[in-house]
Image (cartoon, rainbow, N blue to C red):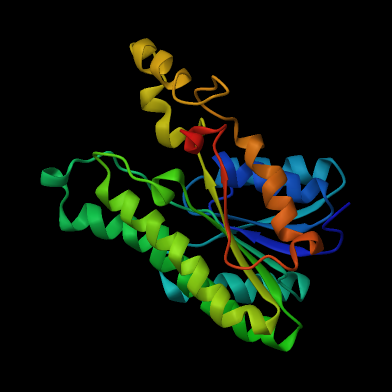
Length: 253
């Protein structure tokens, strides 16, 4: 197991990509802090799946858009397991809103959760990592951060900012043996985009299949977990500031 006895915090881990990464980390031997805000039952289901397979996990409620709650979550995880080796900044929000309908509230919501919270969670953990020989950060960005799409300017800005924040943090923290990298998922089937995959969207789904050389419209959340394990493991110790695109080839064209 590649993460044996490591301690990982995965934000937004009750559903979607975060849930899949948390469960894979558990299978790889990590002790997993399953962070959630609203979906307590779903978070507990993730914990149950990990522990029933012989792993170690616990759910932790925190609104990571608020720095005091980030600090409290960190304190609770350290109190539970004595260490934090890995942080996966996964929690995020996606709104399909064109430019002229984007309000201050819509803009701030996405920039706060998708970008600001990632910075302050890393900042909170840096002193611990400095005292304990380093750590791993995996930011979950998006192909909306490496490219751009219409009708979601705030989301694109937040994820593009996260790509460059990853580089900036790596440039400063690499000397502390802190690896900061990111994953840019392509179109992954999650609750965030369920509204475009349901009945009545057959034409859209058919179009999506033509946009990748693999003919895949939406990836599965499990498709993100192998890259996450690699970036969390010692195999990636010489990788700093990189964004790995996992998109079934979307970016090739």
